[in-house]
Length: 173
Image (cartoon, rainbow, N blue to C red; front, side, top):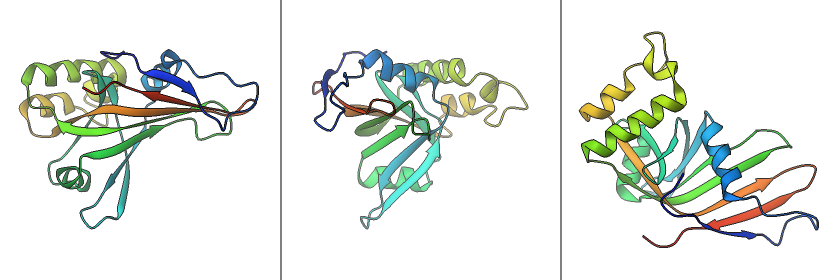
């Protein structure tokens, strides 16, 4: 799923019998999740959170936005951000990816990301009745921004019946 596998460490706040969540399991959560929450920081320091579609591609988490939307304006000022997803329940696993977002400009990378998004979200992106129909064409034409979050640190929070906190760190790129 990534160009390099992260280091994996079980956190001190885990249950006594807990084990670290393998990166492959966290990556599966990211691959199956439909909705993610992106947290950015406004130029005045206030937080901003918004739901969006995202996919692991190009060695990081990718998402799209309009160039004048709040999240794009925030990232122009401060590219550090956090992307989260999970079960919204007391069971399962929640995953957090922290990193630095950058706009993807190269056409071949944009095309790869579009293929990965369309594989993940299917008819939501490819069928005329889909909520995000023709998003791929907009990405390829450059009419929307495609961002890639280069992961620096991540977490998997395993919940009931055994709580675990796993930390993932990626080598500097």
